Image (cartoon, rainbow, N blue to C red; front, top):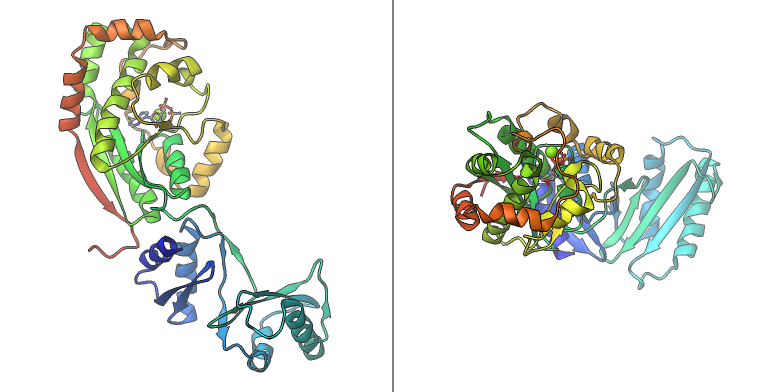
Length: 370
Ligand code: ATP
Ligand code: MG
């Protein structure tokens, strides 16, 4: 709850919120005026750990005061049936929830002539009795739930610029992980489009946490050696094993405890179980794949909802498509891959790539720079 309160405070900077306070299983944000609501609504919806939220009016713990104001509030609603739904968080309040429902229900019935309907009402009047007062509202806005970012530690997301890996990042943040991003590029063998795309994706995803770091790791030198010294059908796998080794080194530098990829079982040749096993063999930290059981259409739908789809489909020159054959190996054998790597100064190549990596800091678009 403390983390969620802090995240909400950070996410709503300069948006017309005058106070953020923690209550029982709830965080309250006091608005300067109701005009702040559209922007605050947008930001709160993106804050992981929030299951639902609402725009409420606050009253003292006194039903008579609610009865004085309610007629004015109900004028903007047309309804012929309604229900009252009370939650009594403060158990010291003298009436039980059903008693409040009956009392206020009778009042609204007499006031408006509308009838009570508990199964399919036109309007629901919610009452939340908190220690500091009673909150009254008409509509609940659903949010993503999950855990507040920062509650689960840091992960390093391997971000390609494709559709899948940003969706994987989003899911890990939803479970409370702070994300650092690692992008491998083949510049100057190709142009900088994939780097620019990775940057745009991180800028978009950066709204979910205070600040994000993007580590740009060079793969060109490694690829040049692989091309000269190994057969084409194994190239992607060798690229991938180097990526994991380098990513681990970078992950340790930023304090990440796991690597995240956007892989889904069988989607492309490098994502068969055999090939995943060959790549994971060099991993010394967990490699998590939150999309492993999803279909492409499901991932695309999520990417649209998250807002990364249109960035991901921009054309780019991806490092993994460099010098790879039409028919790569789908059932690689570990022994074969290890034999191919015997001729390469693996540690040296990895160290060089780590040393040549560049780190960029991307602040949340909702944060004042501090
Ligand atoms: P994506 O849509 O995320 O690019 P994909 O379906 O294209 O995934 P691959 O290209 O095989 O699949 O990549 C699988 C995963 O490997 C990606 O989801 C990403 O996590 C990682 N990856 C691939 N290329 C890169 C890269 N250039 N930099 C960082 N990670 C990468
Ligand atoms: Mg890709």
